Length: 464
Image (cartoon, rainbow, N blue to C red; front, side):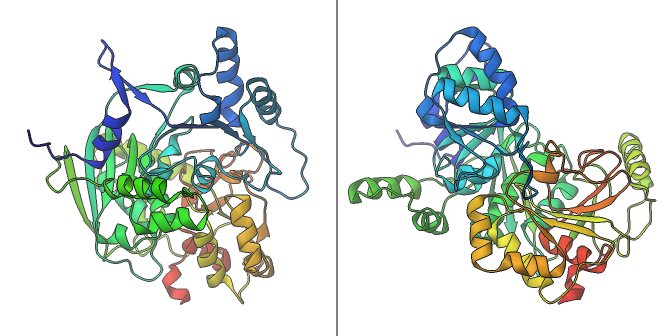
């Protein structure tokens, strides 16, 4: 009997499916499990009280990132960091410490250290676990109870999501990046459009993106409700792992791995529950005006009239404008800012830093703006310093920090002052996320760097 066409998602899912419970939920085997310290105390205290053994310590790792101060010279005083060390020692779990050359944000470390690989399943107690979908890894964010279940069984209990294909066609203009595509997508489809779906990204625009840009795209998919997202691995993925010495050394094992990777794509006639086709040729730099990632406009546009929204969205938009101190019809260009943050698991990779550094070279940050750059990992920081990017940022007036989540999470004390307006490359702009009453505008690294130089929101294309 001929095999039915299958999606990339189904190919990985079926290979890892343990079974289906009577309540309809599924048990899915997890190849790798990576945890950040913010969730360690609660989850491990409950797990310890159950007296159950850890199922696979060799497939589990803990990373210190969310509560790590990134300002050079600060003492690490977080109780979460201390408890992560204690539980890692108690259970014999690999711990990536702050002073380790492997240190970084959990979703970046997952890719750099080979925890995430094409065809693997990965779980992390953080919503942005989908970042590594860019490498062809099927990854899921999990809650505390799910985390306990994985620690005990190496399986996750999960509802099987529906499947959506998003074809991103065309080529991006100069000054436009993956973050702009992601924000445009959320704005166009809606902040809840992906709820209940696993998304596969494809199309000529995705094919032309670097792996780091694809990571930004997959990272931001969570912001429109997706359960997870994935991209079929191609030659760029193979070369990326090869450059990091993460491939098998034995030729037979390498050949078998390549054959498996070559099959990690959706079949031509595979069935998706929903398909969206987006023309990326006309996308311009994006900037958020509100307090969720769908409240976005092209930088050349004004804030939309509330009349164009339905009644419930009007209420939310009006509340967002009040918080942001803005008005419908107001232009974004020229809006004065106080702070710029370039970092987070969305946009702190070496390509992001290179692009921003090239833009600011020979220029100065506006005198009233506090601007910081936080590399996503020690490896990225080391590479940036090797290329002299740190000196370009410092010469322009940016602060150069150590790796960590920094202002994206705010759990480390790195926040803005009340009332400040911040252009940020992070993935969320919720009220008070970057500090009490801080007004966050989401953007790409290029748009953030341009705003730092001008002292106000501007179109980065005007700086070329």
